[in-house]
Length: 568
Image 1 (cartoon, rainbow, N blue to C red):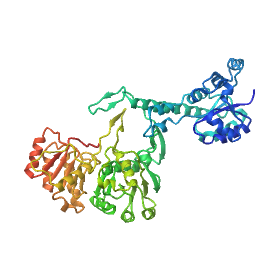
Image 2: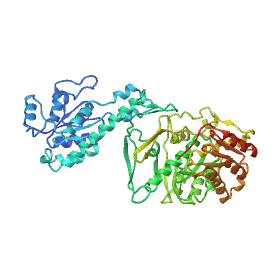
Image 3: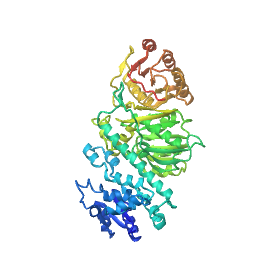
Image 4: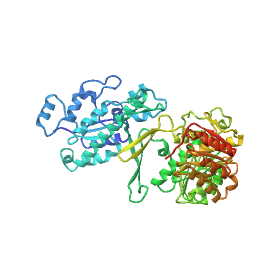
């Protein structure tokens, strides 16, 4: 039997020269194509072009290179089947014992915002998948490598002649490599199918929102981190992210300091970004403090440190062990305020050097910076004079933050016993962008100050768990009632929390936001008793006339938004 032959044809050239040199040193013949062949030859590795083996030149700008019996017969021939080997010899072909191939970067290509269908299709690999599938099918006789991280393990295994063929000690490695091929191909094909389905009409069923629900849904996720445990010790857990959009959302956060993120940290970070997202385009700094995925404090102020202090004042007890999200880089004054309390995580567009030094002195705090986004957001207030004066890094960070609450094409999944729920995401009620569709239904119109408070409260209540009631005054939360089984109980809880922390003086004349309609007038009566003077809610109850009548009796201005903000 002649020298062993390896076919190297890779898009990602990482490590390929090392691999080629090592194989050549062991006496392997190296076959290659196009750019890989040039890289190897330039490095001094003796290479035989595949065109020499097939007797045919590459065609159609390289679209057809390896699709030939001289290649695939050499991969698929079963070494222990005499008929296969006789036929291979009769045709003048030789066996190929190793294939190192990785594919055109289709997923990376479609992640670009300006990709065209033509460019996407040019990055659909044909020859590569055919090669690695053939090699993986015949993995008992042929090594197949698709990940440069596996090159060294394969080189060590093939250094022994006995390990290169048959069910020797390398069988487990061979099977693992073959399994990786079929997993990679499954993910690759799913990405292509998903892209094409997203371009035109799908086989889904339309809903009342106009969003189609596909007949089949396939998720392509890759593990980013193994976690110590899940919600509780004794539960196994890991963090996965979309393979095609590696820089989105939580996966795009850069950790600057602290221990590894836990399962509950990740949940709270998601809740914090979701809750702060409606304030992404605020021209003033905004701070949201989250505990158990729901806000316990939120404020907007001209200075970040003032916003933090006012947000903490909403519920300083719950702020212990919280996650804090901000829409501006953390400065020294704010860092000093955070340094005086126990905090799990702080996530912001960045940290000044002085702030980072102060906060890094706390070994148990985790500091994270969220990514910039150059992509325009449809809600971005481009013509607003206040927005245009902000630095571009602040605006870029705001675009990232805005997408935390959802964007066009975004979907959310929730597992159930025996199934999964799949839904589009609600459009965030961005603070300061406007109140289109709002309707004053009370006899009294809200004052300008009340309108400002209503706008803040409606944006803030979007992150609160249902049933959700949020009291606000002067661009800050006064009291928050979350997760109660009845809406009136949430109202009473919000009032009680305000009294407990000494904010009762801010209740008189405050605004109230409710994430869903009031089913009875008792919620309005309780609000009026607490000092509420303006209410914003979706409306839509069969008892709306009764609720409006209660508002008029108490002299409360009431606004219907026409949309619900449930968060279960």
